[in-house]
Length: 395
Image (tube, rainbow, N blue to C red):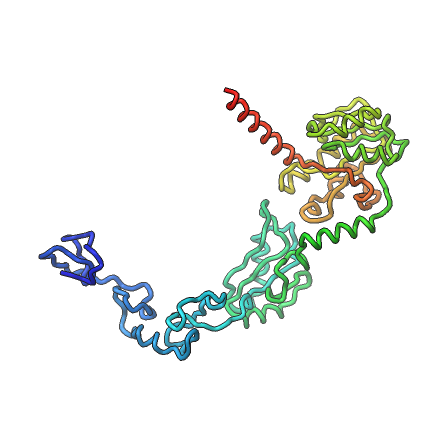
């Protein structure tokens, strides 16, 4: 028994498939078995399909010959109503033999974006609220609430409807807080109005430096100042150079030894007391201070809860080394996720009250460099690897 000459059947005499198109040994007889039904049923458009089909299936050869022009389907109902995705991208190579519709369809017309969602709420609760809000519309295909690494809502969600008509109907469902818009009407960068580029970012930086406020620091020459988390001690060095910090009344500390000793050696020569391996969450110093400064605290991890605990432990520990009527100054970014750390609430819980807020003097302290804790740890690991390689080469 011979089929289409595509090779020898690997099942040989035991092949029980009727109409098998591979070659079989002489004397082979296929046993009568139930035909395997095609998973596409009557809608199958494959000409050489060898599965069984129910009655009412149209001839696939007739379907492909009904295209009027190359690259466009004439009779959509004869084959399928699905649109060719590759044709929309301009990459379909099947031409008139393509089994899908060659029409340019507007994409993302059935997707709406819901913004201004509360970031503190759980994603499942927000999904239930949006399902109740859009229950008057037709079937919702998909609902995605965008979350961060801690499974916290990022403030927006995507709702995919079955058709563009139902999406237009959903746009009419106004909400007092949510901002409901079609995805086509929004820019690619959903979280903000415009996505920052290297050019625009550099322009904004230069404009902020020019229009920066005059130099203002949270201490003066008469204050006993404790500076925490200094990194490479560049902030203390810049403050001393500006003449706003008395070297004899300042104590600068860091959690780990600095990579470069340029600033710390210079400060020690001027009389500043510089300490390393000082934990800001458990301060045990032998003196008290008028002002405690902690610039850009961060655990090196993206967890909001852990950074909040860092602020809480720091404020609780600062009470023990702070004079009566003293002040605590914390520098923190005002963008997300730093805005979710709730610095003011942490201060109120620790017994502090907010006096004032002002911008960080970036232009005046250009020599100040902030080193995250995670960056320092990565550098240390690289140094250890280099030492191991040198030892192996020496052996």
